Amino acid sequence: MRALPWGILYLAASPALVPPCPTDLPGFQDWHERTTRAFFASNLEGEILVEIATTLRRCSPQLEAVPAARKCMSNFSSFFEAVTRDKLVSGHQMGASIPDEQYFSEMPYPEMLELPAELKDQELLRWLDENDDASITSALSYIDGINATIPDPRLQWIAFIYTSQHLPTPDGTRSLGRFFVYVPRKDFDQYIQFGLQQDPAGKPPNGVSVVAVQKTAAGTGEVLKIPRARLKDFWRKRDGGRIEIGTRLDETGIAENCYTCHKQATLPITPDPLEFDEARFGEKLNLVNARMASHGALDLDGFTRSAYGPPMGPRTSPLRTPEFLAACSAGRVAPERLARLGEAMQCATCHDGHVRGELNYPSGIHAQPQGGTLVSFYVVNHKKMPLGATDLSEPERHALVECLNAEYYRGFGDQPGILQAWMLEEDCWREAMR
Ligand code: HEC
Ligand code: HEC
Image (cartoon, rainbow, N blue to C red):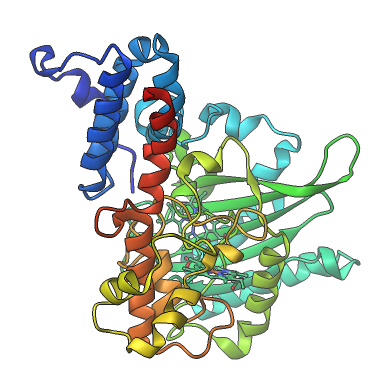
């Protein structure tokens, strides 16, 4: 997905169409409630976000003047500000509160967002462009050669190739192949992947990206209780035989909000099973996924995760009644299995922001470029979630996805969903309007 300059369209809208801002408490309550309901009646993505955020910004002087309204709209305001920052605030295409330039350059260990010099080696980069069996074998042996110089096995690199089931590189080349390299260091770990073109006639991909996990505090070297993460896209340029690596932002002017999908900064790798060489790379893949999972929940520099809403699938929820479960599962689940369905919805026992990144907006609705959402992939296609559940049938897994989304976004009867209730802050308004 690319960030489009929606703001420009809106600035160009005729002022005659712009309704006046509310100016008092009842006015704001009415506007807040109507806007929230309209949002939840929409597809919840795209232009409507920008429309609401733009109005909110326009009316912020009036809102500042009514402190009680500002208080009861704080979840609403922080949500729309966070999810539209990439489109509405220039220089913040990553969606972080830190400007993009600073996000990429100012951090405790600036090397953590740079590619190791070894991975800019021209021979290696050419092998990746050639991308046949022999060149990939050479590239993998090159990494083995680096490892021969690293005595500590825990600091050795791990490299393999796989095909993504979820998304092509963000460079328009439709490349699903990946050359993946895990580079562990004492202070930070890097998870790096180069796009590989699997269509021999296709253009070689530009995309290279990194998820970097900071494990220690700079200066003291003390181990961080909660590691921190940053993400970055690079861009390969082929210029008269040389392959240079710049950043995607510098080369294309485009960056995007990685947190839309990377709710856990390190996303487990689930290769396309039809393409994956399990015998050759299976063990390496498992090792890398285990290292990623071992970080626990990660803090993302520049992101206030709570602004994207509470986690989906809490342990308990007032909505999760037998009537609700029967309705959201739409006949896919036998009545005697509905209680089990309700129990399987407790994703936030792990995805709670402590054990693991919380699945908040737009989890469950944001489609991957290859179709499906990460939630539907993990629950239905990969059958990996809920972790350890082996007793759920295919229809029950489909129902689980539907019910999680219904509970979070759509609500039931006249009860709002979890995200909507959080945004409406009805208790606060009741108190304020007394
Ligand atoms: C549309 C969803 C989506 C967006 C947006 C997204 N990613 Fe990912 N990313 C994934 C998925 C899913 C994986 C797991 C591997 C796979 O299935 O392809 C992944 C894996 C990765 C990996 C390999 C390490 C790991 O965590 O598995 C890197 C590096 C990466 N992404 C970087 C980025 C960067 C940088 C951005 C933002 C500029 C970004 N991604 C935005 C979905 C996304
Ligand atoms: C017992 C703990 C646990 C429960 C319960 C659980 N998960 Fe997970 N989830 C994990 C772990 C651990 C991983 C990483 C798996 C790996 O490394 O392969 C994960 C990964 C995921 C991912 C990959 C992307 C990400 O953000 O981490 C998704 C999506 C996901 N789970 C969805 C769900 C959904 C939906 C539910 C509820 C139906 C659920 N999980 C319940 C522990 C759990």
